[in-house]
Length: 546
Image (cartoon, rainbow, N blue to C red; front, top):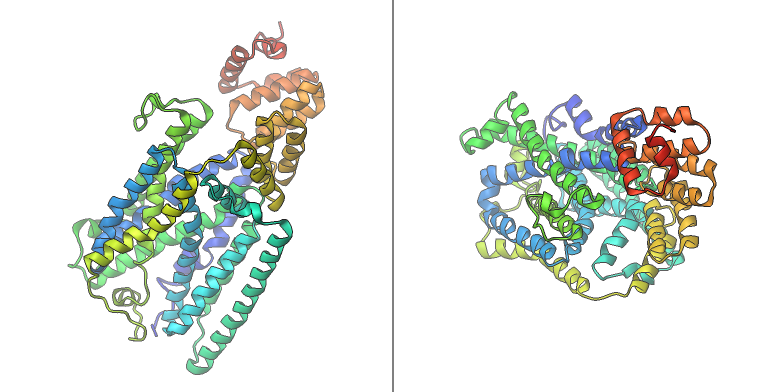
């Protein structure tokens, strides 16, 4: 048992680990409440500078920590060659959805494994080094996370779409009644494991007199936040809190481990490792390196959004070829980001084991129980591990992606997903757009209203409904939806143009002029009028009503 139950200290552990999920959720609610940016824009910033940024520290530790590199060098170098070739190869072959499906399915294991790891650190520092206890903990944490996902229509809708796009519409055969039974079964199993978890904790307390309070607190806070936030009907919001606290905890853990290892073995590490983790002033350098990596992620995200919106073409982007379609460019740029994700998932799967002697030494955990051999892994074993870790899943998804599905079959799947996951605003939005592609507005409009009722900040429903209302001559409804469209994506000036038009058409001309009061809106009006010369209201606004 360690004399210090904390990883670093009471205040730092509470802020960076134990209460971090609640703090992250609170901060996100403040950002969402400011109405300055859309959910998608907030998520893009978070994804680049926090989520993508946290991939780098793990590689720094994997390649900079001598014991890890000595044991797992073959795995690390094989993955750094194989994963980019795999993901970029899929994207160049127009089956980039395979990489997306792999990342989506492995994400659940990755985040639950980190939560389990945090728990085992605090358990070890409280003297709990039992293999049986560790096995029970991993069963509990993974099952509790899976249960939270099963009860999240936003999460499940995204997962169903990812595997469907690879040609495996596995949820088509699942009825709403059967899915409810699966959810209830997962909840019951979670309850059984909770009982086993409490029983095991009591048994350990009776035998040793020790209670891993910090482990219990970390799990309770994280899983409460996950269970609550995953219920949000908006996919971006449902994913955000867990993504933020997962990454922030990781920043802290890497710093503590690396800094602690340097204190104990100051001359065993490479120069760059000492530069980034050597003393207190190195924190700024550590943060700078993470931020610079995040800038790269943000540039990639902006390029993808530019291609999606039509503001950019493949010829405008250095990493794509001039003749590529926007879809192919998005696929290739996305593959660069997915490479970062999958390399992070892979390295993290084996560099944090509490059964490792160097990890225990850094944590100042005493005891030999459960230690594994720390000798170098054979090259053959390391190469095989790296190739098989994602290789089997890649092969399964690739087989599906090469199959051809008819448009009718795809439409039926999208409609079924909206029925199966009724609290997913994204599922109803996707179904509505699929119906519009078929020219079925009668089906699309109720689906858009359902998506908007679930989440007023979903990107497209309000804007589409505004257009429908205006075509019908329902100017009051058009105004109501135009306001909602601006609130959903406040950074888009073109939406303010549509709001100004709606205000103008109900006779509120002074308010319409105020909405058009900045240069971005004026430029957006110019573009709108050029693209819609038949729109008399836009022409009047452009000329100031003359």
